[in-house]
Image (cartoon, rainbow, N blue to C red; front, side, top):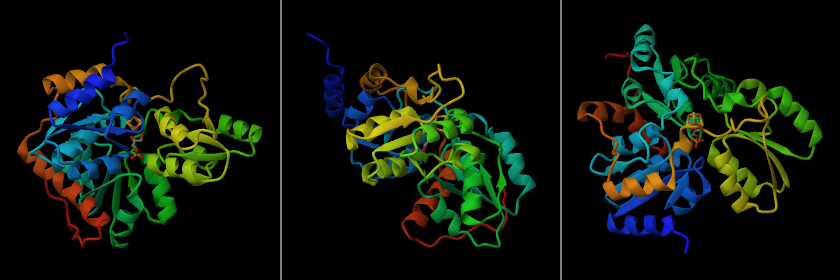
Length: 321
Ligand code: 13P
Ligand code: SF4
């Protein structure tokens, strides 16, 4: 008889009063045992709604940190504490702080793909599904510092007609999609709709018919009557897209080196069913941070939650450490 690890995980969830939240970039088996699957904004919001005492976040560590910052009373588990993100790595606290100090009159709008330390010196957090609403709520005469993803920032700046200082970070997965090869692929499939995540570079985004967060791209596949889609984002999302539209033809956007599995996020893919089971058994590894850091980081996350739920917010006039 085959060993059923999914059944073990379901049993452990009940025993430990735990809930599993998973990102769309996880492997299909992980998405299937999760109680909730979604984009980074959805996961942060869901963390605030669930009743269970233990939250296991199958995604990357900054997502779990956001849940911990907002829900200090919960035990927040990750399958692997090494599951970082190239945007987090490319925005070290000391350098980000220096940038902020050099632009102390600016409002720091920071992508959720950042460390808790960087969130603590930011004014507001955004994700790709709420960035436009949040940036639109900032008075037009205020200077904006946007980081760490330069491609998302450039796209937002153009779309919203808003000048921004950009931090030079990038997602190591999305920058691999290649514009010239995408052009060739599009010519081979003129009937396909190109859908892309805004972490792709501008040359790739110029070919996209639809640009948006993972949940926005999934919604497009679900609701658009097109039969063929070229998808410029991480491969894990194909799992839900295929469930929604089993008859649709989904083509991964091309990278230069066609032999590699470069459209897989190496951090998201550090998680496995075995690590999830072990984390639930031992209630380890847990996301931990000092209470001072957590409270400081919470200010910018709370502003995101307030703006997206229609509450009025105030903006600091000057940055102080
Ligand atoms: P979403 O918020 O669109 O899910 O994106 C998260 C992410 O890490 C994309 O690379
Ligand atoms: Fe970070 Fe890119 Fe992986 Fe998303 S896909 S978690 S931005 S490295």
